[in-house]
Image (cartoon, rainbow, N blue to C red):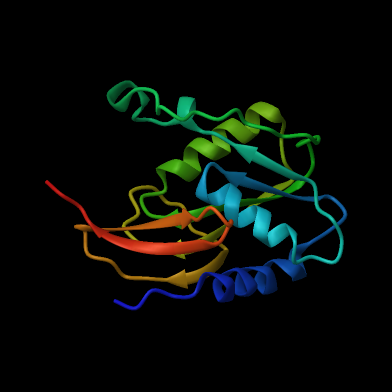
Length: 166
């Protein structure tokens, strides 16, 4: 399978986001890949947007089963969430559980006016009724396949496809 080019996907996402930007908009990226994508997106807008990051490790519904991820990063929301139009950014949308956890954490910071979900790749496979309004690409993957966003030492982003091992 030929994977799409990251820069083109991010440009497409920015194009979809621009009509929805207001003075009360803010970008929030989900660690780790969503934060990388949100950072790249923030560079493409004419006006600077407040930018924050979420680490949803403690909000996951499988936390009791999988335990604490060894690289938990603190969430950083340096702006008032109350009445903001949040653009929540993630790298890959699959089951919807990560997004549910991110929204739970966002509401701990205040009640946003709205939340729009922006994802680099929507791979399908939803387990919860969550849908992205802004999508770089829709990719249909087999259940045994996994797509991952990587960042090289230079900061360049790339996608890789992996087969899940049993």
